[in-house]
Length: 398
Image (cartoon, rainbow, N blue to C red):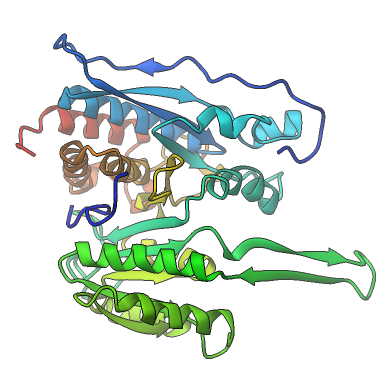
């Protein structure tokens, strides 16, 4: 995998309903190596969430356990939490009152998906995913995008090396700050606001993160996405802070791009981009476009990072809950596997991360192992088994 995501960075409510008793974590499942010596064990909070989340998280746990077994130097203890829309419909809350305390001391969080057809999306997002991201200050959302072996991009004349990006999304404020309200509901004069909140501290830290990440990659090139021609206050501040932070990174070349023009550049000139930083909303949209240009939303990973490691970071595939294929056994687990690669990097296990990435690439290169979203007929279990087999047979040194 070209360039570690973290190589330049320091290592380190309920809504409605009846009161619920404090929940307890499920019993940890630990994989112990057979060599007999003591190894470190990483505690991972596994939250499948909704839809196909349970299917891809189950696959991810299996692959991570295979990784640990192959490495022999560490183990995993998975605590499983049944937080999601089904719990909300039964109890009025996606997670218990003490939910954050239950996962606060874990080394990382592996998350599946959030969303159900019979629960409004904004209720799900704010009740579960953002209810974890924001209190744990996971302000850096990192989404690598490249065309994996065997995957075909919808772009003409793009076979792989032309599209190799990392999108950094500000993940704690901006358009998703949650500031706003509605008045006079149902009346002709009804009004609503959603206020984008940008702070100097929030913008500066995501810019420093993005410049440091760009510095760690071979091209040392960053594109700052903006819309300061029309949004003349917060986005102008965004641009100004980018220029200030850039002076701290003289070895990083950078440019600026309006978000609408950025969609054209991603599509028509993908080779001109490398590391990208954008606001919460802009990067949310652009990263979905990036995943589609790389072949499928089903293979795209995400890391929600608290770089200071005050709180656990959360790793998840970009794809949604996909209720149309739930239970059919055809969900693509590659996005979860790639997110697990990022988790291993974050935990300080680069050799295991590289080994899992090689296994992923070996499997995607085999078109008989493509799931329906990639035009194939393979099943989730087929992909998982193949990745685990590739891990077991990997004898490369790193």
